Every structure is written in structure tokens, then in C-alpha cells.
Length: 67
Image 1: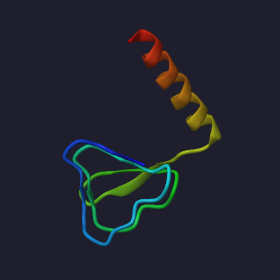
Image 2: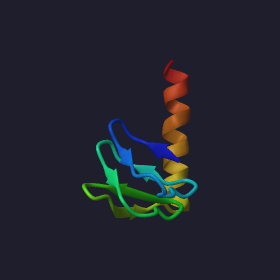
Image 3: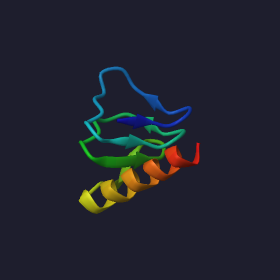
Image 4: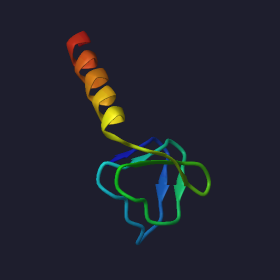
């Protein structure tokens, strides 16, 4: 799970494994696993599939090499 800067997750709301909450989002309902939510109130804008995960892992590996 990744929660962006200044995002608000209301008490009692669950964020699923592998989910991403965009910066500034206000999460009022449970977030399913492997989804990206954004907005006020937060809504699902994308489901993270295997291809998306692979691209993200490659980008993270490249960032580590750059440091």
C-alpha cells in the first residue's frame, strides 16, 4: 500500500494490499486490493494488473541504480 502526501484515510476505512492512494485524496470508503484511487472523495481510477506491476518494479529498480 502506498499513500500519497496529504491524503486522508477516514477512521475505519480499509486500504487493500497493493493499493495506491493518490496525493491529496480523501478516502471515505474501503479501497480494494491492487487499485489506484484519487480525488475527493476518492474513486478507483485504475486497477493494477501484472503488466502495471512489472513496469513499476522496473522503474523502482532504475531509480535505485541512479542513486
